[in-house]
Image (cartoon, rainbow, N blue to C red; front, top):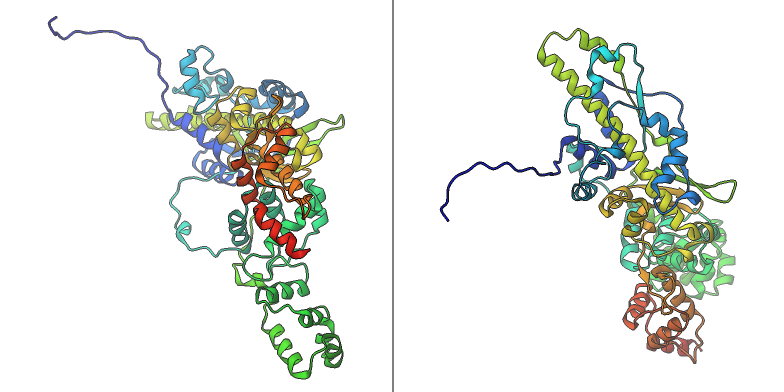
Length: 520
């Protein structure tokens, strides 16, 4: 067959990453502080955008009503309260229905980058000045924080490591157990600049629904970190921790540390009676005490810590269901002043001015729609997470269910990549504390009886309980623990038990047997 040039007409569909689509994807994954900065930059650049100083009305949903598709929850519950105003924020097609007529292949490709966008690249219908005379403002609201891509020299300046960062880094290396890490973070949040723990351990246990013994074990782990003496609850404990590290906490030193008020009064006669040492030994002990650091945390940076501002607030409703709402205090309000645009457009004298105004209006409308969709998407995903983790919110950390991105994506009708963007840098305030949305995603352990899978955290908790209850003459091996867990309906391998045990810093059965026999 001879080769010859010819013209051929083909029709195909393709997804184009328009600047508006890229903006929508970027806004979705920004945290609240970054989004605020982004919106501030747009307000300075675009003369048609202004802040809305009106009354805050949080977008909310009720988790108990979340069905297989969480979209109905946020549209019906939250949408009734604010959805109408938000939907009317600007003219043009709604983001949720942009690709209703697109083929399934195009829809899937779009969903991989952002669930709901529209493809109108031309000027918005709202830019016709004859239609805008007398029209009112359009508004939207959302939560988050933002940041532009401006070159910032301050980002290259060396930052002092704070005590909290220093302790958190050590915590990540010391344990791989998510339960212990979460408890450790709460305790670290309660450490002041001097290095002292200023929160009640029992209160932390009650708030997180964790056993008091487990919280005390995590505190003991934190107290072994550098600098020596950190996470102490008082001066005596701080000095004791430093002396233990130096292997100098003998009975005489214990008596001296327990009576620091006598040392402050310089009552050396009473101290000699209590410590049962002579004058020379007492003088050496006092010199050692004075060489210790009463404020170990002061060696680290004293830069002001920025508190976490939650994007989503979860509170119990009057009927026992969980009410999920966006944090209204972090919702930047954006208005598009269409009346001002109409007045300026009528007086535009050149094509360049008209194109500039058209671009500003189109950009403003897209920002409004993107912020609106971002708010609805965060609310939709958060509502489904709360519905899935209801037992954790009600009973505590040991009831955390196995959860992954696909389960949430299937429930709310989104792509996994969209759920991943939504849960990045977003925080949820609950009655048990503030958690990053990604915290609620945990791996699962299959059930040996074919029932519901078990969360890896709950399995770790059960392994630790079995080891804590073992007797000195009946130390459990990893194989025995596997057998006991399978009898309880947990299908787990021996290497997994060993991995979880090592992550919790629990020695092997041989080491535990030797320790128990030595203490007997």
